[in-house]
Image (cartoon, rainbow, N blue to C red; front, side, top):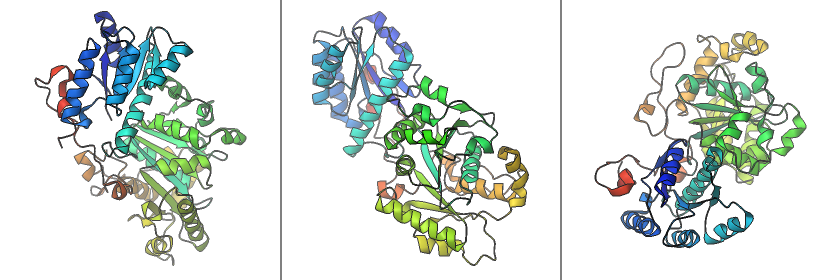
Length: 449
């Protein structure tokens, strides 16, 4: 999602410096600065009169804005335009001014001279808050789409059903399709993503747990950029550190990843904790992996019922993947779907461990041959779940071919939550950049598409 930012800066030199730095922020769309408080309020009023969707997500107010003092301007904007996140830019970053700015309705304070990481963090936080307010008012994008990419969780009904292997192959398929993909190991005590990809890294998800504002640089320090094209956020090497990652930390971490990557694939393991329950709740697509045997199917039913009791996920909004399937299996996917009340995927994964044994033992599942029937099935499933192309892109109707050839994949809509949320309400955010004043294309946003 593009974050529209309107600077309110009176000094031309300061305005140029702020616009230059804003232009470097990811997915940011700065407008031409307004020179004073009167122009700011008039501009926002004109946009609000046309449509609330036309308002910018973030307004940056410089400390020397005039003629009205900066704190008064912030208070006025917060009262008249509550769906706009206001950030104060000031050379005084002391606790006194911070408290006064928060009391006036600001969503953040950035100190001068500007630092990229601090500005990015405050703008992202204000934008996410603005999106949340608009969603509450029924005017924002789908909450599970949020400002950024999609989140897919992969959970196992029980241990040994192939959860991690499935998550890794989903992420590899998305990366091969050209999507900027992060793979997160949230099996916090027994995570094996690093072992499957032959990766050792000193940082883990636990290093982000105590950080309230996760800046792009902090996130980059914790993520390992693998040669497969994946960005890996691994589980802690010391399993006891998994307790540091709670549901609050998970929401911050997943939100930061979602803002940076097109797709975030999370291996949630087989245990329900506060951390992975929060991830499943936030997910656009929640996948539950089982095998077609009585014990695993009972475990899958138990997992789904627990999610429903905890109000984490409804059964009908869970995609069931059946691993190690054969034609002669007595328990077929249709029966599993009926027992668990989930939505079984169309493509079962065949039982062919001999194809996998060499790469699994070597810890290099990325080297699995394209002719592998297991790989073909999992990459086909990635297309079926809509992971190989952005859901708003018309090209998503036909995903890339699975390894080994075959026809184009028929990709489902944006995920199981679409039925509850009424699909994507964001619309086409493009627009005409004609004579629309200092805000460029904004005045037509929200009504096209």
